[in-house]
Length: 103
Image 1 (cartoon, rainbow, N blue to C red):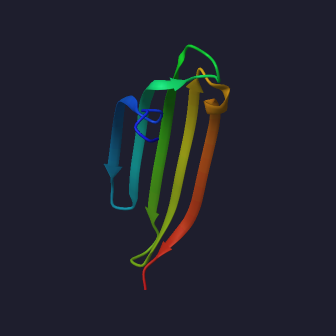
Image 2 (cartoon, rainbow, N blue to C red):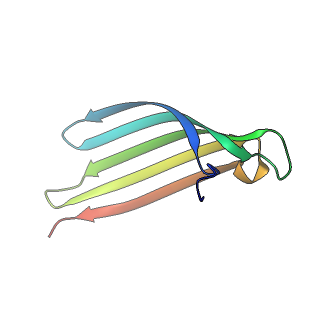
């Protein structure tokens, strides 16, 4: 940014996680909140308000042992993002299901 500070921001982030491990299952749940405050960048072109972005995220990971060489897994994530700039407002969901195989 050639020293103008356009991409500089202050970030606050807090997260909490919980995990559980049993003989056949591995589980992990993570919840997080973050906020970015840009110190130079305007929220809208020609505007006087500086850009901020807030996000909430939930992640769930499950893994089930099938046998000594294979595990079934599920990874899910939901994201909600809010901002004073419409291009930074969105929700996203990601789901991955698969088999982990050791040779």
